[in-house]
Image (cartoon, rainbow, N blue to C red):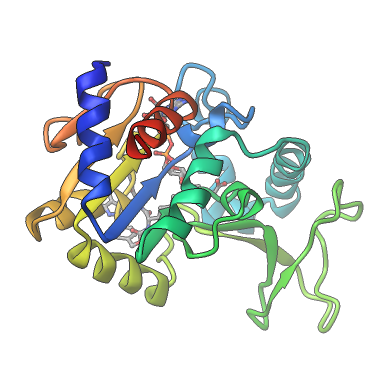
Length: 246
Ligand code: BJW
């Protein structure tokens, strides 16, 4: 990564008023949350078909819940890192700043970000499979698995989006709408391999936004990016922040 590129990214941001950020699992990896597709990624150890589809949950809710209970335990014990914190700080600096995340770990909110669109849900929310009510729940470990709805007694599921399921249409609409308006989109820590989230940067780029990517590895978006900063989010975002305030 060249210092000149970091300076240029800082300059682009400093001159902009409407910033969109798209984050993925990579931003939380420095907090100790495993990614999905990296070297130690979850999909290297577990099969998505067995754990992250509605069919898997119908087949074996206990197995799916055991996996989510384990992940809740892991996520509940970690803290936001400098990458999360800088994004929370930037939200207070720019007139319009929308943080679109694929992450379900809640670490952006824990770092202080407020204007967050959680495309794939949140691991700390449960949803009744009968009444569709959504409730916050931070109990870890959960105890009785699968947990039951306190109102109707039906099975609760994690309020996350599995493969083959639609994203919340309102959240998705807001994500695409702001992507078409923003002047800059920062794309941080995503392999850009899961749709429809992976389409947001090209949508923003087509509408005239500059794309700045932060990722240690190249992705399908690297060739689209105006600036590609190869490295860890927890190191690069504080550097950009330093240059912004010079
Ligand atoms: C660092 C770093 C550091 C490391 N700093 N960076 C069009 C074409 C083909 C298929 C489809 C399509 N449209 C829809 C589909 C089907 C499917 C899909 O996209 N499949 C592809 C895999 C091919 N999409 C869906 O099913 C979606 N639903 C949908 O579109 O409904 C309508 C529809 C359905 C079916 C057909 C057509 C239309 C739903 C997707 C739900 C994804 N769910 C998951 C699990 C969520 C719950 C949970 O966590 O348990 O979401 S899968 C998983 O992947 C998770 C993530 O949010 C998501 C994205 O992963 P992410 O964040 O990019 O992580 P990684 O691990 O892939 O990458 C990490 C990156 O970080 C790497 O690049 C590293 O280098 C980097 N990194 N350390 C910065 N320190």
